Length: 431
Ligand SMILES: Cc1cc2nc3c(=O)[nH]c(=O)nc-3n(C[C@H](O)[C@H](O)[C@H](O)COP(=O)(O)OP(=O)(O)OC[C@H]3O[C@@H](n4cnc5c(N)ncnc54)[C@H](O)[C@@H]3O)c2cc1C
Image (cartoon, rainbow, N blue to C red; front, top):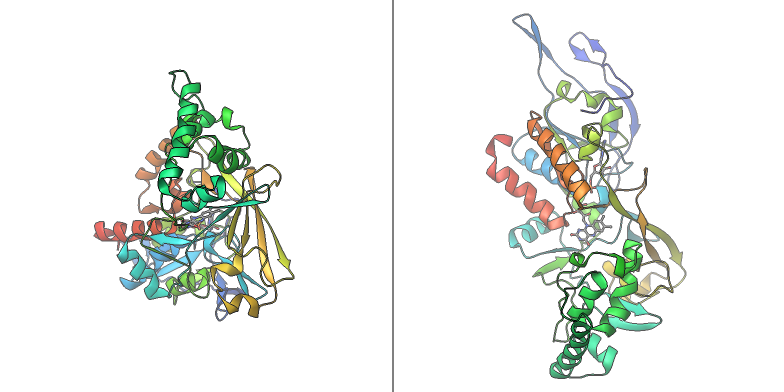
């Protein structure tokens, strides 16, 4: 495990560790005191060895959805948890910052969606969700198209009004692309996409957007990135196919606050640079949702990530773009999307009752040290390295690696909830 740079020795006073109140911190809700050190740890002497009675059953590193969900389930099972997070707030990437009365998705737009009724009912039992339906719009050089590709898109693209006309247009263009390959397989993403949807949809809605996302020409990207490009022959702009979708009423902080209710949490505490690095002193088990390579002190090298940066500003208008999500699919704009946060939670007159709005431009950015690690890179190098870390992780006693950083795997929010639910269902010994 990674060596700590600062060591901390709790002060033992008559069998109790000294508690030092250092600051007050907790978002959204009444402030609670945060303590450096642990309140009390009783020491028992058995057979000449000092056995400490643990104060916590679990030390949970990371207060994102995985850590918060784990803590909730553990509390339900009567276990005592301490949750620490190195950020100044709880909630990990689903955290929202309130600006001008609007919940701003600080780490990127988050839309909850699932087909799993158990998951949907569970999250709604913590906080009711609204009816937000994700219907993004694409802006290509000032012309708007509905997404995902559906009859509305094809009408906007070609003026076709029936599924038959739309299908004919797509088939013609796909046939042109296949003919151009002269019998060989597509060699790159551009050729692959052209054979799947034809040149008009590719050039206006995929090509330059993908190039901005990856920072490389579509001709230089591998074909396997795009396996399927579904087209809908119905007038349906609902982006997700899932049965359930929405946003927690009052924002994601309500979900996190609900999950972490009555659980001790400390923010601004980095596991590796705090007393909790010696976690066995404080808990029986460790739930670790930080980066797996960092846990093992980068023994096999650093894992790569892709990231997104945001430029957020307040606009002096009630309704800036009329939609939560607008994709910019040409190189005319350097950003990939503009998010107008109020549309996730305000509908109808509510939009106009607030005279201001908050928008964020999203830029796909190469990851460098110090940035937020967002998306794992599943290429050969990283897959090989992460397998080695996973082998080490299996050997760590009483440590559960979880979440997107701990598992080096992209998860949507609902699968994270499912993962914790099934882990705790299948492995009774955990609780
Ligand atoms: C840009 C973006 C957009 C997304 N949009 C959607 C969406 O629309 N819908 C959807 O379903 N999902 C979406 N997701 C996925 C969603 O964010 C994840 O499923 C979820 O956040 C995973 O939770 P987690 O607990 O695994 O990780 P995180 O939320 O990252 O939490 C990990 C926590 O661990 C803390 N931590 C790390 N190291 C340490 C340490 N050493 N000491 C103390 N604390 C530490 C971090 O500070 C962080 O708070 C999106 C993800 C991204 C990146």
